Image (cartoon, rainbow, N blue to C red; front, side, top):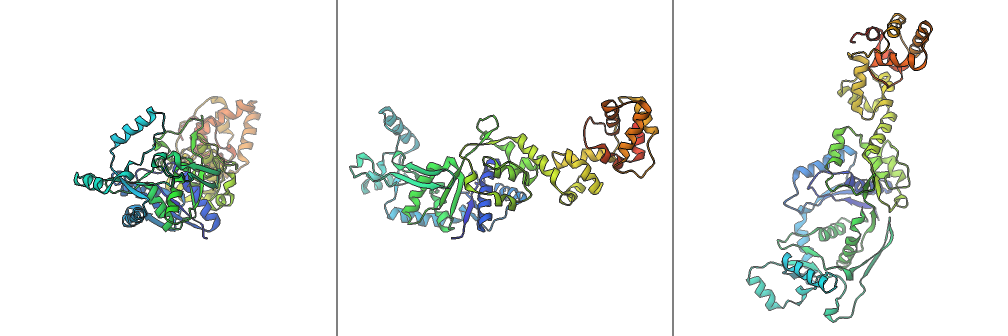
Length: 456
């Protein structure tokens, strides 16, 4: 069967690094196996879901380099969910309940007070036709629970097996005891279907073969496997990856706005730096920058993904971004450099790329090369002598060594006493690109002005 996966964000906010880790693992699985990647917008939350957020998700994914073979919106499939719900009702697997949140809370507290687990007591199953008619006459509307394939002692029935098990692609053999869970609500009082239900219907209809998502869904997967089976369908294969934590071992904040893809883009991070980090963090592969998604897909293997939490460090991401830039050819950045007002072509790129963390940093180095800077004079006598000894142009990569040799011979300065004053005066910086590549780009007239303490 053709591998088919889905990435299913809710359009209630912008994508963040946690979302993208899930997205890229699904994408790489599909890409490596020649399968399909579906974008499914889980937008049944009518109050919080917006078209603006939906478009923001598409924008972020396209910027990162994702392409999807199909897009679905759950809000377009409400009739389908209603149809399947009726099937479950007819089979006795979906039953109406009328307790309010307050009533359910009181029940849970009583159960805990008796030392019992706070599991729903299936009172809804005991309602007679007369009870249902009376509740309807009072104008009360039910929420609908899915009857899990187990029995509770008070029903006086022979206990059914309650253990759901599967071989998880990442975590190995997994089990969930349905007997420890309440029958889940699948449809709210207002008729809105919940994720636990809609996701199963979608996965069946779209022939999803693999569900790759966070480990916080493990218990949910046990419940959903029961729903797949109630609908006569074979569940997909599951893979539950660990969640990201901070570099210090603490959980990432639930407010991930500062780790959103929108923020990363504004900060100047490269798409492949973000994807490389998201794909490789928490795996046995080294976190290194890769040129494209095909390179990452070639590395993808469920066996490489650790069950230990992945440590996300924004500083490590910035360092990865720098490594990526240092490897990029000029052709890959030429258009963007031009948009920053950075000229100099290949020679300038070769000179400065080793000193960039973000591509926008190139603007500062272009100012050093071609703009007016205020020289920093540490040794006026030495820099004046260097100005006198500047050779005629054209200059090349040998000019710097020839100049420093001549200045050293005239002044006796060596090492830091020679090189540091010249670098400060010529660039206004303590460190930076090699001056053998920078000096020919700065040019003789600008270099002489700076060496004589003039703005240039």
